[in-house]
Image (cartoon, rainbow, N blue to C red; front, side):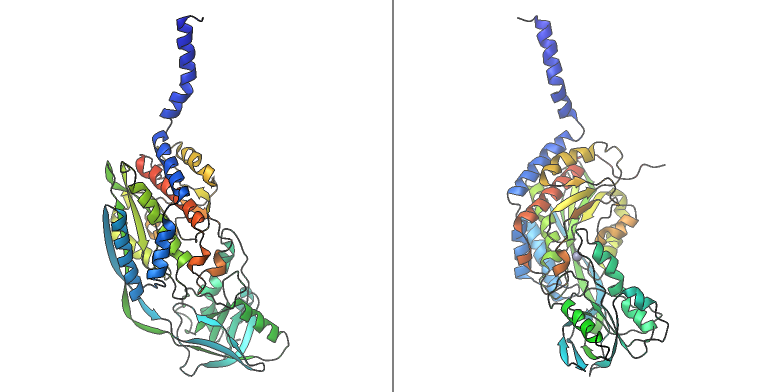
Amino acid sequence: MLPKSLVLALGLILAAPLAHAADAPFAKQEAVASQLRDTALKGSGAYDILESLTTEIGARPAGSTALLRAADWGAARMKALGYDKVTVESFKVPGWKRGAETAEVTAPFPQKLVITALGGSVATPAAGLSAPVVLFKRYDDLLAQAPGSLTGKIVVVTERIIRAQDGAGYGAGYRIRGAGASEAAKRGAVGYMLRSLGTDSHRVPHTGTMAYDPAAPKIPAAALSNPDADLLEHMLARGVPITVKMLLTPTFGPELEARTVVGEITGREAPQEVVLIGGHLDSWDLGTGAIDDGAGVAITMAAGKLILDQPLRPRRTVRVVLWGAEEIGKAGEAFAKVHGPEVANHVLASESDFGAGPVLKIGLPKTKGGEGFAEALMRVLGPAGVVYDRQDAVSGGADVEEMAELGMPVASLRQNGLDYFDWHHTPDDTLDKVKANELDQNVAVWSALAWMAADSAASFRAPAK
Ligand SMILES: [Zn+2]
């Protein structure tokens, strides 16, 4: 028998680590977040939401009536899921609409080509545009040409983008689509085509936005399917002049309406403080917008639903935002116009907009009064296959950029996007590309992060100097 005092002392020593764990920073939040993770991994409901959006609405470009139907769908769905408050914010977008889009080699090897107009492109003459082709395998080779040296030509750039988990290939190639038409026009070109910014080998072109430099004439711009870019390379390797005819008939009308939907889970103690998550409701017009960005919409709506299912609301408010015009870069601006004045109340934000692949890495802004937050979060998310990236240059996504510039802290949730650019912005962006269990993993991560940030008092703003 040990003396009673020694037993008590041993008992205290043995109990100490446990008592410490319960008092550890964020222990309460960690416990709930672990439950949210486990519930999500068993089946989060995100796939059903995505199936509904792609089946009942389909393609929903900003400014279309389909986007307005999608906003009605989002608001109704959020109310049905039990969100405390649902609001719809309306704003204006340019009235660009896709028309016909065809191209063919007319000489010396007549063949059809598969193209799609870039968003914002002007039309060709109604009878089409016929011109000799000048092809550059590297975009920098186009930029090296003298002004006037490409007069009367259709410029084709066939630079390939690399397949990369983090989308680095797309990032590097972005300027070829965004700025290429004006660069070609400055050198005298009358038309512009690029090899699609895609990693697939399907005869399916990838659309996306472009912008005209006011200093250059506006020329029609399209993306070629990747096999058609190959085809033009093969023809030109024969050293003979190639003539292509392209026809694009997009139209510019008056400004149109777009809508962003905001669903709120009202905080129980500090409702004015907001944790912001979401995806974008608009999509390109070619597919059904399953991966871009129905997935982000479904992931974050489902994450909110799991939080709503908790017996208590989190301390702070969680807002799930379905932005209505990401693809043409208009939703973040409109959102900041409404919510910019309350930016100081925004605790942390991020947008899910990189498809449906699992989250691999998380990057967080520096915390104040949040020491131990990342460690606690990683105890929850490590088992779900996520690592903490201390080097991450945090960025929250296109639709939170304007608010981030005003000082809203943002987090990065980096997904595996190895296949994303096989389907991105194409008719192939459809539901069959999405795996339900990978959506569930995303929901586990988003619900855990949102809960921990919203239920705690951590600040993610850089400490004042
Ligand atoms: Zn997107």
